Image (tube, rainbow over all chains, first blue to last red; front, side):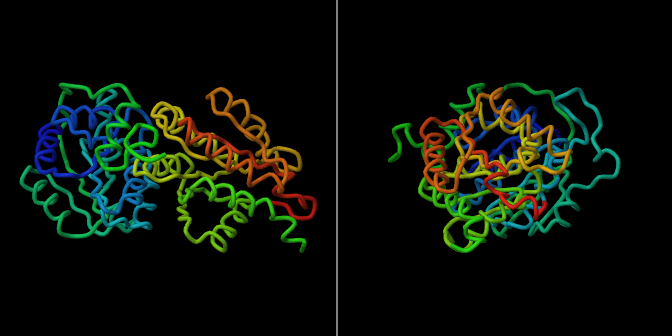
Length: 195
Length: 180
């Protein structure tokens, strides 16, 4: 299962979830798999996708929040697992596209190519449920479980690298305002909410 | 006024100011002076949710997510942690125009005793200037509430993070006898 294929399977399961995508290939593939206004594409801040997802899940406990991270990005902010495991937002699903390499920067190996186990790390930090998946059927089954069983969830999906075929919009403010309106809390001052 | 109240009145002012600006989430990495803010929040503003982060950059990510979900947010950190925050500020908070109040407890300024705190502490204003983030020093406990409220509401209106600096002469007036 390559990352674009996995992204397509994930997008096909979405209803009203908010999705936070880590910069580079995870964001490119999410956009290529199917753009939705409920997608927040990051263009920088490597490592912080799971932190953004945590804050969003705290502010909006009524809405499921899915984070699409990379193994290299998550390794940059492993402390986030500890904070998520402590806060324990039931509505947060952390999906790690683990291709064991820095795909956006030329394919250098990450520590998961050696011994690092991000699923075990999430479990050790107090996530409610964790699972590693390798096939589309396993991914779909895991995503179905996240609807029935409270999180925080960590799904570590072992994927192969795939060449990006599209890029999301470059306008950061557009991404933000479209996202906030779509999830029902329009940014103040944009005409959709009281100041 | 007791000695303790006189020494932590600034913290009560900070809390009053951020609460008046509608802030109900504070994400932080702790330091000693900020513990007075946290104590005042716990005692007087139980509707403010405080979340501890493992690192300052992470705190800014959490705060950004809170804002995306419609919450008004403050981040609190020690000046030493500004260095840990720069990529989050320059590639997320600023370009996406995600407003928040930033409270920086200063080290390395007048009253410092630890040389390792001095280079970053002295660099803080220039680093903030280089990023285009305005900063206001809270000069007295009496003015703390008004200044914090004004900086926060300005940040929210203009969608640019606003910074309040808390100098040691404010937060650690008895530094000669209480180091840390």
